[in-house]
Length: 185
Image (cartoon, rainbow, N blue to C red; front, side):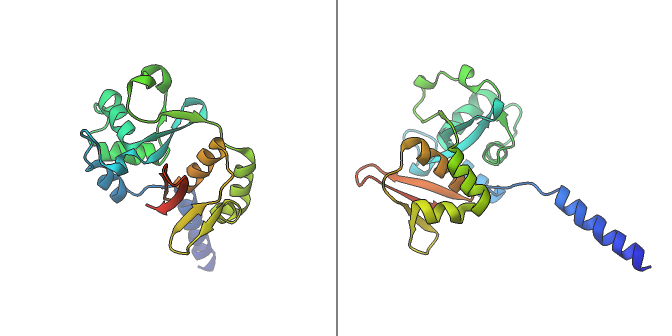
């Protein structure tokens, strides 16, 4: 009897580990995003940076507004609801194939930029998680808000923003003050 119980416990544990998926943005958040005003002008939160995957595992920075355009143009037939599309796109479940060729990027009012992950930041993130990046690149006020220290280049900022995004933070850029703050979604 003990053997059967042990077998069942191990089976349940292995099944729960195997079926785990990374969810960066929960469905209730995707539903709130889908209800934003994407008219002219869109709500400010619709222009905050989000990250999607393209084929060949390239990473692109865009915005919710950009995702709305992609959805309307290419995905509304395969996704019944915009919230389902946002959920899959932001949780890196969609690999957008040939997105650069499909979109004339200069035509659209949003950022749509491919970038390379900084290998040094990736190493820190894999070894120490977000805390390792926070310790090295940010100041904290202790309330789920982190201010970027000065002296980081544009590519590293995109990488840092991507890793924060995977941990449910948005990068808020103040062009006037020249600051970047990461705030919990």
